[in-house]
Length: 309
Ligand SMILES: NC(=O)c1ccc[n+]([C@@H]2O[C@H](COP(=O)([O-])OP(=O)(O)OC[C@H]3O[C@@H](n4cnc5c(N)ncnc54)[C@H](OP(=O)(O)O)[C@@H]3O)[C@@H](O)[C@H]2O)c1
Image (cartoon, rainbow, N blue to C red; front, side, top):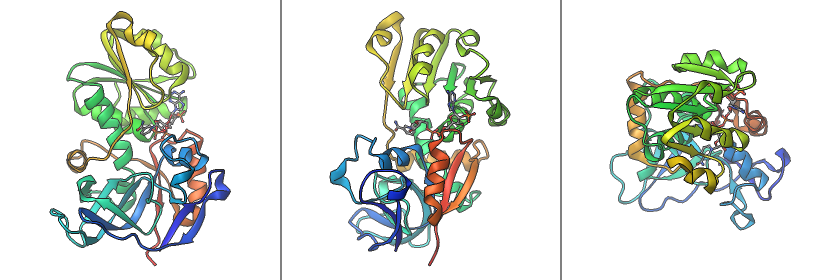
């Protein structure tokens, strides 16, 4: 099969289209014939050697961490999936940008009938991250106020919509070019991070979702009220701020979960959540796709179409 492999870390030049063996199915796994796959900032970090879980001893590897496609074969002990089913999943650090991927059945869900392959491929990793940030780590409840930094990106556009589904009051930051996009996602207030100070606008918030890090994170403590929570996908909030004034902060790594993805699929099927794909590339254009994500100004998601022969 065709796959985008790297055998050492570096820039775009290390990404090669290679011919490799189709992965061998293990018990409890499903072989997925990929139709489209998502591109995420983590792919860039892995390629550059900046992702702590992927060191030289894990190379060579096939890039890509979320897939959408048809079930090609089902391993021993798998129930709930059969050949031909339309499925999607977040996968481990090896295997997405390829014609086939092995996926543990426990990480898979059926694709909503309303989504084509491109849109399905944009969901799993970003949507898991958004859901886990808000619900599992952020404990967001109806009527609470949440500020989402980077609300127009891959994770952010799901986070804004999930927070709205939860009945929260949703504020989010983006550049001037992203404000209209945020409004379409349903925010109560879109904040232009280049021309407005979010700490002048947000007071006594219950939750901040930090998808940006750095000084955006450190300034965010000011917007939280007593008992407020800061959840980051990037660096761990510092202990000084975490312990001050009864506020809490955490950083987490998203994980795959088929049941959670099925629940997210239900929200999409019900029309409560939309998937926005900003750009689509062919597998052979994976370098350009990763360049588009690496500049950190995507509105929605970037995906790759997978050739079927
Ligand atoms: N820990 C985990 O498990 C985990 C999981 C997923 C993602 N992540 C990390 O979380 C971050 C977000 O992921 P993502 O996929 O959503 O990234 P993304 O799609 O690349 O995010 C891009 C968005 O960020 C916005 N943005 C850039 N600078 C900003 C700023 N200073 N303030 C507010 N918004 C800003 C951009 O808006 P404009 O173009 O309008 O500027 C753009 O829409 C990435 O660093 C990623 O590596 C971690």
